[in-house]
Image (cartoon, rainbow, N blue to C red; front, side, top):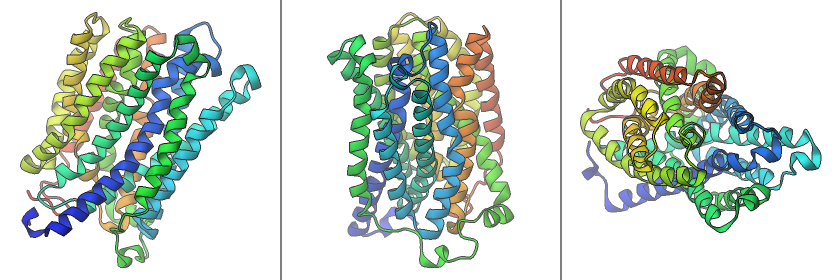
Length: 429
């Protein structure tokens, strides 16, 4: 079936649904990424130390802890989405993210309440991690179900357009604050501003998500195995393991070249924070624009071929790119190299949610997508900064490059297991 079977009204309705789901996704990820980009400024307020690497290591640890809540969020919200509807799940997750951001914005520092400060910061991040753990699977499921056949790759790519858009807006807000405030002001109170913005934006996205139509049917929601781990693992264990396998490498390389890259340019290549922020702003904008193009490419060549290109190029190119970036002095060269790396990652991210959703039936789709993604992301994506900084502090930074390369080789091997035809959502190949 092609998109010509849809009436103009139906196309408009589905496009609006994509926009509505995407807007909430953007806010969720803005709130989550603000932490990573502001860490340079608030680390001393929560983790006093003379060594900036130790401070970043501690904030990266809290960042990773947020990821550890994702499997619980993936299970909880996946169950809600499969049993009570995608719309309800998406509204609850964005409300939780709002609460977590507001809490961080108002937190007292170590100087005010001592060890309670990092403890409360950790608690707020765990809350946000639970929310994001549920957001990915439900949004991916919803967007795959409303996308037009024949253009599923293109439409589903907007999940990462908004995911990256949230990251881009986070770094953009930091860049603007860097121009308006001094270094001391940013460290004292300026870092709180992005968290307030995120909490307010979440309320707007809640309003938008209220207008969405439900995509799951009453029949699938009432299925006795809907949203259950028993239903998922009894019939779809192989699909779950396959998704887990390639998501591990995909998450690791994604976070290596996005959230960690700003710190890498400052802490390893020796660039100042403002230059690194400018580079990452430009890179993330291009990366965001690439997603629909790579999504359209997957509609032509097939999801499996896109994933194989991702695994192969990631395996071959990760090590040389990171080695050159280690000693780079030209901001332009750094920009080109990171853009190249993220072009490779786009083979995966543009269809990330869709290629997972196509492997599970509707009654366990949100659970299968969300839980597999959350587990792989918690173990490999969320720990990327922590592992990189930990190896650097031990004088073994190059080992991290080999680690990413090995995980990309594993992603390639698991991509070979993908079916040439989509198992459930009908593909056009």
